[in-house]
Length: 140
Image 1: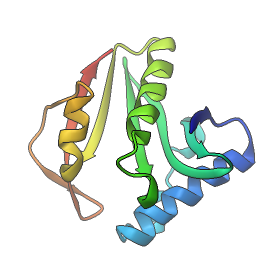
Image 2: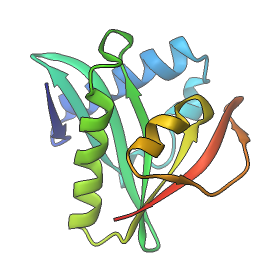
Image 3: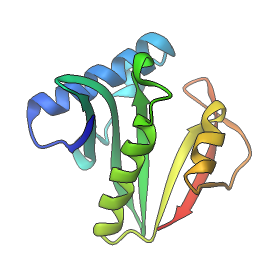
Image 4: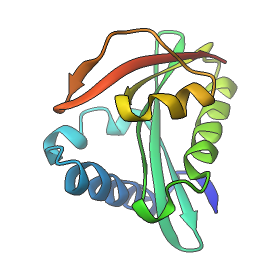
């Protein structure tokens, strides 16, 4: 498996494909909320297992931090370290571009996963697209 910073339209379509499968089909997030106004100002990442896309995420910069968003892993690839690999690649890019910290909105059920990566919770639980989330941060 390998993580790629999206450079082609095909790679971007692969990112949208896995995001649609995970967020829209599995978690019932409306498509108009999933694909938003920040797509063109974000750096996108995809994870491939051979030619199959198994994960995606995006990064955008807000003030002095990198905002990590839309992290998703295909059902068949969960628990295999794909999420960690994806997060490490995104964090490395954020740091390379001068971000001092990373911030994300974690689905509450994934809070422990992000804690293992060094993130700490900085908010109470809130709903985003009808799903419980918390805000988490990490110094880079």
